[in-house]
Image (cartoon, rainbow, N blue to C red; front, top):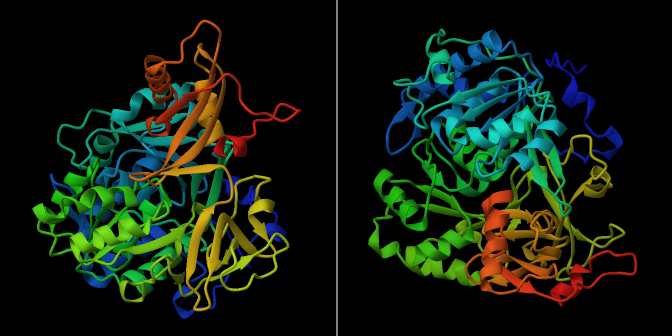
Length: 542
């Protein structure tokens, strides 16, 4: 019988009705986890127990820490959470910070305590944090002090968020830490903590994504889901081993980054290079400097890095992984010609936590992403869930050991049908089981690896006094794959010129996360609408 360790039952109470869950495929030997399972204990304490204690776990340009040192810091943070903040298993904790050892240690500590991690991207503004905090009923936050302004603005609007602790320095050191900071509190604690006796089906994290309306959807993942993402794609495609050094650009707040920048290497006692900010040049330099073996980033970065590969020693690099947006074949070939590496492409989703379709380099087929990862099943279906013949485009349906469980969200019934996860993508599959991406099936704009909801950008534009109407779509772009384009109707008395376009772009950057701003703006006298007043985005696309 299932016995949750959660004293606070919020996540269990807000799971979808069982009849709306996808089917879960858990019969593979590597997925047979014990009933009592804490994924942070398995990843961190398990690595130390397996003899990896003195191996480097996390690296930066400034410092590095071993698995044993990381374990000690995590255990100290656990004591702060339980003893100082009096948090109990099941409470939700917001995490705010760039990719740094302290951000990684905080995530592991939250999970080890039996709390529920709600990680958020550093670029989010207060207005984007508030709905996340409210929906997840977040009670505490651990936040990089450099992000204090937006965090304080959000906290002021969220009564449930009673406690915020700040961490001061990205490299996780204690020296010079401000009195009362997380580092200072942790330094005063013993370096031992027994992990919470969670069940494998207790919720470990809530990862937020945005749909076409911009309303945040919280996807809930169990402790076993975290290990499942580590035991399938990296094992069958990346073939991760203990001598690997991972690096890349995806934030730990993305499940893509959580896997590639933390959990995958930890599962085998390997190492991660954490970069707070990276440009194409600085990522290449970091690979060369630290002798990284596996890199994760978006197609945009690979295209820009390809022109500079010859200036850096990348001889250590054995695998390059692209995900987060469609990989153009031209970018794949450009990178291969420059680096000699065949790109590993992949498609995953926040709802399924990580990649479920990909292929190792020797099995890549041009024009496709790859085949389904062992442990998953996928097919192409029509609107009636009937399987389509090879080569015919349709809806991608997936099932496996992970799947969609939205937090108290009616959209669960749209994502899951007949036990299958419907990702919102249009794909085709050839006779050999290779899947080719065609397009998003909704209005989500995916630009340089970021998901951007058009209506959210429209709402930001409409807060400017000069804007009367706004419509936002994604348009093709050679460098970024897709960029945000806004069609704007100005209020009387305003001129639609280059100065106005720049002013609106700056306004959006100041209102929501800067990466969401419209890179192209076209001024119109009117926007196409239905008789009931609904914006017809398809006509803007046409």
